[in-house]
Structure formats: structure tokens, C-alpha cells
Image (tube, rainbow over all chains, first blue to last red; front, side):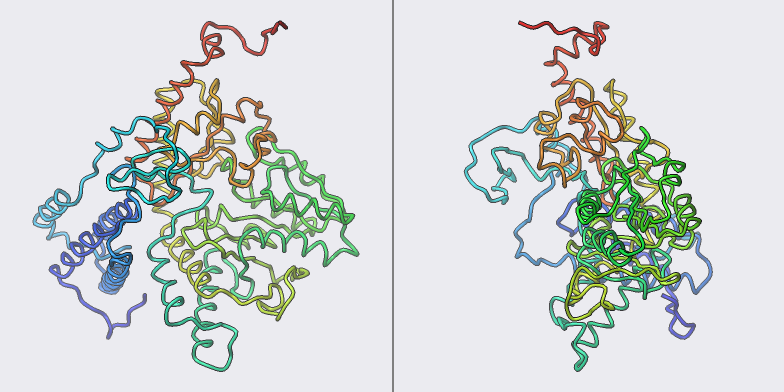
Length: 92
Length: 467
């Protein structure tokens, strides 16, 4: 996760908001109730925890981490089983 | 997932955006949960667990309107999607055998295995060379107990363990007894903790191993590992601990705790089933006799092809656990409080089995007086919980762990174990409280013993007459 100065991506506020929105949108696509709720909750709590970061290196590291989590979430929410639901939790 | 923060001056507009996102995201619907009061019995038409169009599932004669709430995290855990994502490439394109030395498939597979080994080692404070992958904690326990004693069989003939250990440790000890070794099964106190003085006095000059599990799978009690490690170090005896339930949940440091051997399991920390690890100390070196003979993989400790996808999943699960231990710990502690308080507010005569202070919060084992265990579980089809551990639930005996705590037979039969995990939500806890309270009240209404108890009669002192 350690980003060298030359590889640092300086994230603008628009990009951060976009990341947040994309994470929440992708989170809602998980078919499993528990994972869906966890993804949403962890995104919100994660952003809340990091809201006071000011050092550019740690900001860039967190932004990169968020982007990789978004990639993982996108890959895992594709329709592997052709749309057939594996089973809905009783709470939905 | 710890993404970037928003700058402070963003907050006014960001707050509005966040509010809009919150309101537009899918809300939880509790109408279907409310409509499910009890499970109906119907003739089993199909064995398939596929739901029909309305989502109703019929299996083993029980109809429920959706998949149950999963609160059995000690039996197994769901696999984290981040772990699945890490494993899939090794099932698809990178399917090589890590022991193939001659081509790219082997090299990349071996690199993935070694990287996973580093991830596992980092979580317990060990050197990667001290981690050996096995098929699970059961195999690691077998290697630890039987392997150590058989290696040192000329000098060491005695094993010290506790009565609340996992079945695989107790069964391995029984096998050793049949081979002629001595085993001391230490009793535990009524709160589940091992008595340190009795442990120290049980160690003899020819003791080859002390085995005490870190977190008990049935009652969730956390043993004082540092103190036990210190005693074992003073006496020069290797200390083995079954840390399958403890890994990733309580901080483990093999140096601080003086651990010589440790069994780890993948599917208890949101990793795949079928993989585990054995930690084997190098300084001072502890030798074991291998239980699996073959091509000498894993430095001869455990022969057999190392299953790359499973091992990669295990490593990723350990890495995630290290990052999320504090966040998950806080959340699970709060959910534990919520569950216990919610049940205690509505029901009396509820007993927590095991120490409350020295406990892992994700494991709550409760006994409900005047309720029969099997009927309680049958009435709780909407919640997936367990009574006793999965390993012993096939037999009709009450759990030996609860018996070792000194719990009465009737209370041991009504024990329910709730497992709270990373993915458990507040809504699930609230619904569980509702279901439990409803079922227990219904059963107690039918119980003549409960009526007697409410009238103030002491059940133990009744002299039952013969007809």
C-alpha cells in the first residue's frame, strides 16, 4: 500500500465523492443480504473514520485502497449464476 | 475497506449527498419477517433447497419463507467476497501446482503460496518459515498432539490437557493412551477457565506437551494464554494451543504467549473450508513426526500438494482479519450486549454458560430453564443457531463441555449457542430476540415445571411419588 511520491494519485473532492457513490452503488448489487449490508456499512464507516486524514501520502494510500475495494466489489457483483437467486434471506 | 475521506470544507454539501444516498438505498423490509411467525410442517415434496417463486423453502418437512438468519459463526463463517476474489484466479487461469519447478504455472503458484504464508504469519507474530499448511485445524491438532509425543516417545510419556478441548484433541489423546502414554485431563472451574495452580502441579518431568485451547468453540471462554505460556516455559514443556476460534478475533502473539505449537483454521475467519495451518516454533525447535507420508512437501511436516486457491484464500482472510480486527471487535461486542440485554429484558431464568469477563464476544451460550432443547431448536427454524457444538450434535449426549463446567443435565440440554460475526446486522439480532422470546414463552406456557417454579416450589426438593 505504500505509494512512492511519484506514483501518488492526488484525489480531488469530486473523485472522492465519486468513489463513495460508486462503492455504495456497487454494494447494493450484492445478492446476499449480509454481504450487501456489510459493504454499505463498511464504506460509510470507513469514510467516516478517515475523514480527518490530512497527510497527502496517507490520503493517496486510502484512495488507492478504496479503488481496489471498488474493483473487487465490481468483480464479485457480476451475474455469475445467470440471474437465478441463490436464496433470499428471511429478512428481505 | 477504508477509502478516502472527504475534506472538512466539503461537509455541508457532502452531508446532503450522503443523506440522498442513504434514502435512495434499499431499505430493510421487515414485513416478510413479521409474516413468518412459526414454521409449518408439510410433507416433503422435494429435497432441493431451491426456493419456489414466492421464496418459500421446503426442506426436511419444514417450510420457511426465506433463508434463516445465520447465527452459527462458530460452526463456520460465510466466505468474504474479498477472499473469493483472491481465490478465483487460481481456479481459473493460474491453476498450476506449486511444487512444479519447471514452468510459469508452478512458479506463480508457489509465489502465491509463499505470500499467503507471510500473511498468516503476520497475523500471529510468527516467522513464515514456522507456518505449515494443512487441511484444517483438526489435522493440525492431530499433528501437534500425536506428532510431538511420538517423536519424543523415548523421553516423554505424559500429556496435560483440559476436559473442554475440541473433540479432535481429546480423541488424539485417547489414541495416545492406547499406545501407552499417560494423559491428564484437567478439570475447569465453573466459569470455564483452567486453574493455573492445578496446571502447574500436573506437569511432570516426563510431560511432553501441554494443550489448552485459546477460545472454546462452545462457550467462547478465552483461556489465560500468557500465564499458561509462562508456566510451560519455566517447566520447559512445549505449549500447544488450538487457536481455530481465536485467530483474527483476539490478538495472538506467539512470542508474548510462549506458544510452541498452534492450530489454525481457515473457515472460522471468513476463509474457505478445507484449509488450515500449523504453527511450529523454530527457536527452540520443536520436532514432530509427520502424520502424512509422501513427497516431503511443507518441509516434510505435511506431504501432499498444497492447495493453492485454498491457501491464497486463507492468507487473504488473515490479512483482512488483521485490518478489521478492531472494527469487527467493537461491532460484535455491541451486538453481543444488544442480544443479551434484549433476551434478558423479556425472559427470566436465562443463564450464560461460561465466564462473562474472559469471553470472546462473538460467542454467546445461553441456557433457558424449563425449556426442552430439541423443541426449542425445532421452533427456531427462522434462526440458524446450534446447541452444543457441531461435532457432538450427532449424538444425544449433552455437551461434554457444559458437563465439565458443572452445568446440570437439564440446563445443558437447553443450551443455545449464538455466534455473532462480521456480517451480522442489528436487524438480525432484533429479530432473533423476537423469535427466541416467542418460542421460549410458548414452551414455558406448556411446561408444568415452570408453573410449579413460579408458585415458589423448589424443583430439586420435590419427592416424586411412584404410581
